[in-house]
Image 1 (spheres, rainbow, N blue to C red):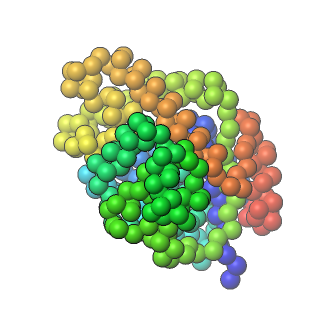
Image 2: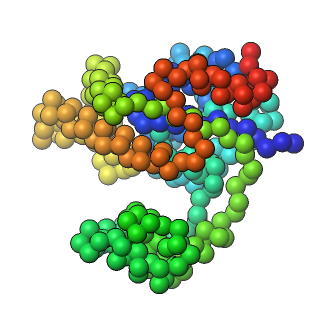
Length: 309
């Protein structure tokens, strides 16, 4: 049996992934697989831009509403569930279309995950502060002494990965590169990667406008329901951009208008981090804003048109 075929539709928040995904899925009879960490949670509908009931009737969707906000969902759990969806689709002759903005989830599906013991956040924070104080090249040299294999793959200013390598060494006494070598290999996949690309100005304008639309749709009331349900604000689900900024307004510590401006700003910052992640992706096809026709052509070529209606 040939390797399963997967399509990744990636991109920052508010870049129009959902509308393009629906068009592709309907035309090529694909099944959409959620790759957004917030859409996994029940009750987080408007703020996560979750597909509507009508959209779910149009196209089969997987991995939505799989847990509650007080039951955090790890990337490892997501990987196992996603691989099960891929296997099911292959048995039925369908191709899954993964759609979302959580880069770690796409990586978990494609590459698997390194299973290491949980790391003390205090260690990571201390390393982050030290890197800012003395410079990441200094910590990169320290990593080279502890884990030369990993250090050779990193640039001297890659603070996130340098701190992770040092934290793993400090917590486990073993180099991260050894943990990586021992991880089980992922199944062989044939993957087409697509991403929507906007200018920064246009994307930021879309982000600001979409959050105002979410507020008009009832996001504040949705956040209030979660708050009144007693969900701990420190839960990962409650820290999602949009919800986290509205909780102080519900508690009377901030005006709603101020919370909206703050949420828009944090959404823009989140999009910037997503773009940084995407620029490190290999074999990624960047689509222009009006790139539906180009996407159709790429998918048709990837499927040999056999998946088209």
